[in-house]
Image (cartoon, rainbow, N blue to C red; front, side, top):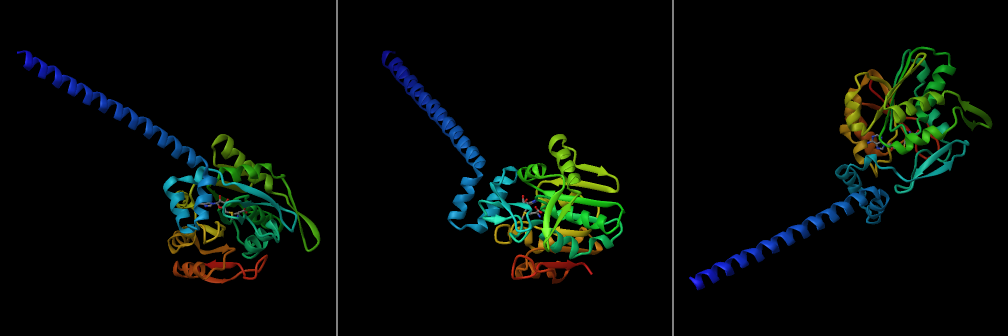
Length: 307
Ligand SMILES: C[S@@+](CC[C@H](N)C(=O)[O-])C[C@H]1O[C@@H](n2cnc3c(N)ncnc32)[C@H](O)[C@@H]1O
């Protein structure tokens, strides 16, 4: 009896010890997991650090994979302010070391490579997609050209952007943007509409802004996803993601094919890139590609037409 009881007690002790070890191990595991998750989440918020590491190892291809895996789109890019040669302001992404516009002139670039290259004022009731709208300069210049050429028809504009920080920067700009071209001081006077549209979205979560003969819809999020909820077809697409080196998926056949399907039969697209890969992907997607104006670079910009 005694020895059995002893064994019983010994056995119970054994299981108690084992149980305690398990509880301690589980608790340690939980604490470590919590720490791990906290560090992981913190590091996500330190996007700059993460991207710096990626850049340091020149893993440009992995950049988009990291972006995708960690869904970093909602986190702000770090950016420097630049005054370009036409006097207008733009930004430069610190991490990508890429400016939002050419140093030769942000407004002049938006005007010449997009609005004027496509003669946007000639179309009655144009539908415009400003893809990767950033400071909304391309769409604002188009609206300015349309109105200053006497076209008072309904203008429908879709702004596609995935970064709140750059949208907030729109709000800091003046209602009317000054720039110089060919030695003359000029103004984009319609910018207040874009600020109002963006303010409405940022402050009230309403993404449609209407004014007389003007409708601006802000599609916030990854273009690849938001484009699917737009039912109208674009007559003009201004396409300006970061360069093909950093966001190759934005310049792929798949992306251009999606755009092709969302454009009207005579729709045209403009972009600053003249890379062979971009021209090939556009052509493969069904566009007829031709040279656009040269500004701030050696190579021309591109115009891709559906017909
Ligand atoms: C080179 S800047 C475009 C500048 C712009 N055209 C302007 O006038 O300011 C690229 C912009 O694309 C945005 N962007 C990058 N990837 C995007 C995506 N997948 N969907 C929507 N916007 C994106 C960035 O936040 C950035 O504002």
